[in-house]
Image (cartoon, rainbow, N blue to C red):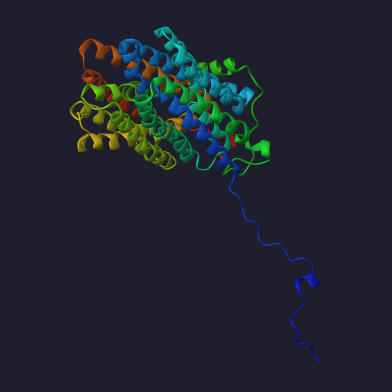
Length: 441
């Protein structure tokens, strides 16, 4: 008689076969997340001087030109440090470089509490914070994206670049309120404390390369070539520059990016708050508007990264600079004692364009300069910050001598049109010649 009993429990059959294992996200996304946090902090530290101009002027009696000079030193070092930081990351590792950078920022910020002379502002905010933030500049984002991603690289650069806007968004309104209620020294200490708080995250979670974990970069089908034998960081950075300056594309990209820096960090990032205050807008309100630019910059930069994966980067840059120029021409007519709808429209429009230029510029550096694209981008980013420094000093001098920023806004609009022409003048690299056997076939 056949048994109709149910099958024996699984114990009688042995252990149940394991189900399909859940695939975890690629580790590249965790590394990108930690990089984003570090970049948020770096951008917040870099943006802090814009809310310090008026308090320092009131405390010490320094002119805006004097304070702008310290900001200019910060901007120059922020940029010039970048290519050497990229080489240092290749030689000593990302974690070590970023950790030292955060410690420099903390020291430079906290030491300002005891300053009494303007040269001390230059030494602290100009030199120490400039060196620290420069080591965590956009070259840091490009290094992580190029090492850890093959697919979605443009999008990742866009997201990491948006970390700068997020830092501005988080820091500026909070620091402005803190300065108004407690004083500027409390803001300096807060920046130093936040820099120190990021250090453990970097040490624990940031990793150098996918191969350290036995992984391929995200989207890669084969292992990339290993890092070259470690040349001295300065020699590697200078060697990349020597190679790049022989190419017209370098000068076109550097010229356009210098104008990018002049019309963002140098002019608007540094002087928008005091310029709005000149028109009767409270500093906290102006800081909120500048932070709002950061909100829309997040969307604009991520969208730019997405577009960079799909469109010609040259045309994207041309459009970005042309639209930014149009917005800057209109700005002198839009700033009023109360934020009206047309000023808010400028904030939205300009915010979408703020650093949307970065993903296509990084993509063009890799396209034109190959494996040295990250180091070359470091030098192009240096031109961005030199342009920013010139604009910060020039705008401060114009305001001191003319009592108005109007000429600075109009001049920036003209420069953006020049950058449009430079971007559209870029040419694609010539295709490599075919092997003779293929040519004969």
